[in-house]
Image (tube, rainbow, N blue to C red; front, side):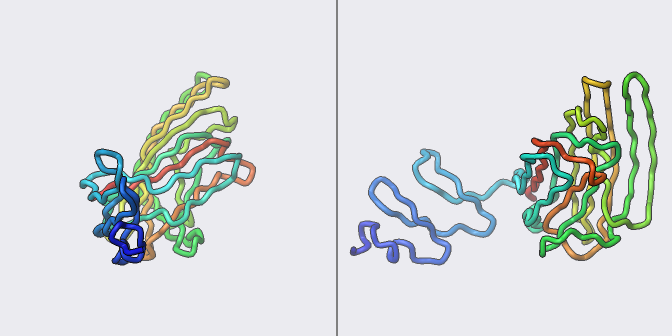
Length: 238
């Protein structure tokens, strides 16, 4: 074919990165966008177009939802890009049937959890715990020695696995380090009492190797993240 009517693919798309789409008359070329642009439909919803996301937009980078009970899970190649994102946000909704804290490790570019002692606890923690009428209130602060994992202390602890729990936090890269801010969580269990939590803590990752993923671990091999639990990470654009 002669290419003038949009049917010759080799003639229609001429540059590396071009895209091919069809309009009302035939095949058309969408010239490649610029760096960090995203593809969306135009206002008439009949053709694709490149757009530049406004500063401050939130982009969902990764999400993991359990289809069965698991003792750990891992998200690789999340898409951390400090040239695009000012910081990152994570949250979870779900349950873990454990009486101690969930843990986390960063994952390297080979999809291996980073198990060296490069995680230093810093921060302050306050909480209120109530079960069957008894309440506990406490707090602590720490500048601990490095450990081989981070404790996600806001992941509400429920040995019976009856509580629907949620929590969120932030990941900030500052001075070449990834800091995981573990902000707040809450959980309730109507079958055996009420569990209320409010945590604040932070872990500093003391390594120059930038992580590309994250691993989340239950406190023990006998504990499980229950089916349906969901963990999501967003990037907040500069």
